[in-house]
Amino acid sequence: IHVLPSSVEIDKYDELYEKKILRNELGMENNKFYVLHTGSPYLGRGVERFVDICKASSDIFFIHIGGTLDQINRLASLADQEKITNCLFLPHIEQEKIIKYQIGADLLFFIITEEWPTYWCCSPMKIPEYMASGTPILASDIGSIKEMIDEETSFLFKSDQNSLKDVLIKAKTNPELAKYIAVKAKLKVKKNFTWNLRSQSLINFLNFTY
Image (tube, rainbow, N blue to C red; front, top):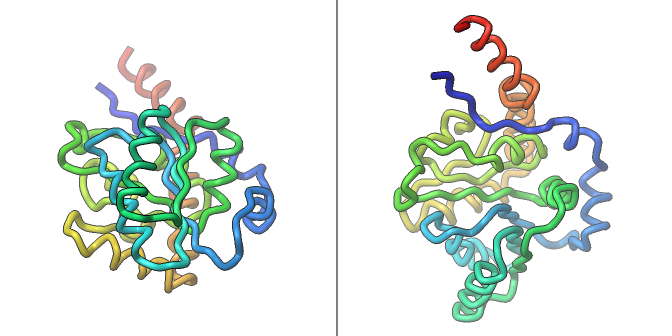
């Protein structure tokens, strides 16, 4: 058995434009702090905690991209219930535009909970994609994703109620630290988690085994 983590096509992230240009293209306002989550918002993953993000500061704007219309409507209903308006929920869009949002955002949100049965062994595609974007990451401090990111390459929060908000505010109010962490994450993904490296690792394993 040869274990291979998810990887990213790094060229797609290196070829795109500057953050400022992308923010203008996507209609992102300069006076807002954009927190982005991409991927399907399955129950048990914990995406519902966008509520805590939106309530943390009035200048934060949360964007979710991905999932079915039913899943999107569920998140929108929760926002209505909590009287939250600083958020936007989009269904699946083309990959190039997702990459633009990832690069344009101020912070990328990844959450998983122990209710999700594979939290201890999953290798989400969004982690190397997030790392490649050059945008700092706010992520759950549990499970197998810590084989890819750590405190040097992301802002990790615990599962208790206050940790998410505290770490979010730390990332938001320390832009130089956030920039440093994002650079470290991009260097790490280029060194360890590209599709070319993953393919070569598999080839080497097959050559050695057979």
